[in-house]
Image (tube, rainbow, N blue to C red; front, side):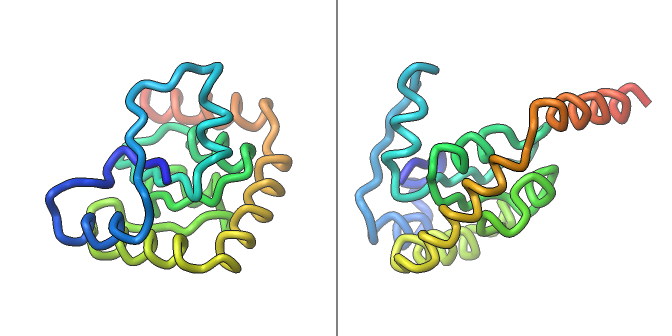
Length: 139
């Protein structure tokens, strides 16, 4: 499982991380990123601030099940291809991590939906959404 947050002292994090081996990779080069993500049980991305949601989309394209935030652009980008959680709710995040790590069926569904979702997203859509965000910020 890849996660920037797992392993904290919080009891919810310990409960979620206790079900699987968590490997903290630190910096991963662009060249190594696809194999690191595709080799993971799931990709956990609890972002509070996200422009387009490219990291989650990249993980889906690599065939990884995704657990990510129910905020920012991520629900629109991920749709039903990811488990969406409140990134400020440790218990909800832990529950989602446990659910995805223990349910082979759910992981397979997320992986299939994620691959489909990633194929539906074009670079033109990414550019248009990025431009929308710039316009919103610029006022």
